[in-house]
Image 1 (cartoon, rainbow, N blue to C red):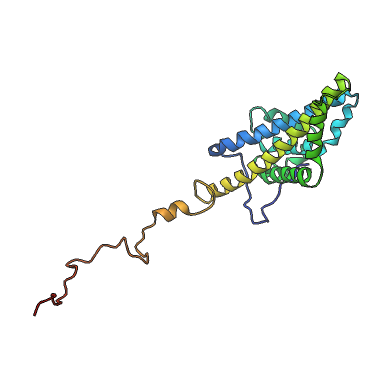
Image 2 (image 1 turned 90 degrees about the horizontal axis):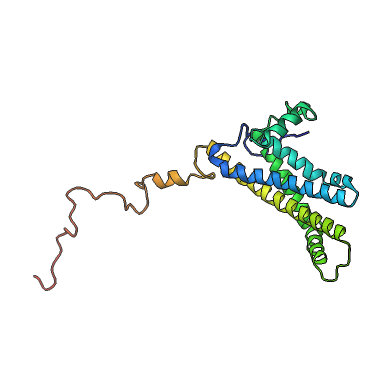
Amino acid sequence: MVIPIPGGLGLPNLAGPIPSELAHRRRMIKLCVFALLGSLAGKLMVGILLGKPSMVGSSINVILTVIIGIFLLNDDLHLKPAYDVMMQTCCQGCADQCQGGLTCLMAWGITNAINAFCDIFLSDYITRIVRGFSGVFSPENTTGGTFTAAMFFLLCSYTLSLVAQTVGAFQAWRLQQEVRGMSEGYAGTPGNWSQEQDEPQANSGWGLSQAPAQNFQVFSGGGHRLGGE
């Protein structure tokens, strides 16, 4: 079910858990996973209020993203139980394909990026959210309280899902860069900045770091003084 993206695109093959040095990225991705779970819960609540609980099934892309996020954070204290349940039931065949951890990072990032891009640029997703909130809070809204509450939860779910997927894609991109930099022996993002700063400038064209030669005297030539003979 969860197929990792190989490193054949010029990207390193990442594996293992997220390094402890990048715990802040881990927290942000975990927050995105729980935000997506919250959006699914909101849609389920709307379906119950409207008598259509099956409407949560239309969010298959969000469900897939949540599953990838759980695989990515399979060693997390709060997500590991869900990971263990899936590995013992519906995802038994995924053990050989994706062992979890950083092997799922690219799949997480690409899935979030595609979903967010389609919602923002290829549909009127944002326009519908704005119009929906305007209608819910409009003084001219004469619909019943149950329907208004359902629409409010649905719009909040849509907004939460869009924000979580956008942030999730960005965090995956930054995490990939930082892990790649660490694997190359640098503390930050890729680049040789720290070493370049430590290199001596003996070969610099200006030669400012070279010490003057011994017995060198400034203006030691034998010229004539003005007015002299």
